[in-house]
Image (cartoon, rainbow, N blue to C red; front, side):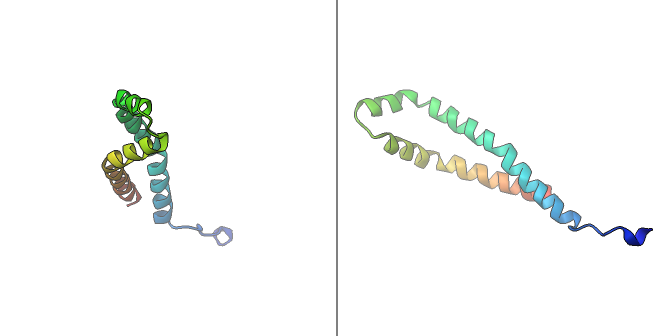
Length: 88
């Protein structure tokens, strides 16, 4: 009877690596969005003044992303490290 049961297609390590990567992507994306929206909300007056003085919206977005890149990079590094830890 045991001869007819096929072995698993993937080893456990592959399953946990895929699951860890899935968890990292799914759980951290909303957190990054929340942190970035909080940081932008703190600068609402500055953004309004720049728009009133004639700055193009894409220039404002670009300057904000340049200023927030350290936060984004640190968050991504922690996310990748967390996913690697879960995968092991």
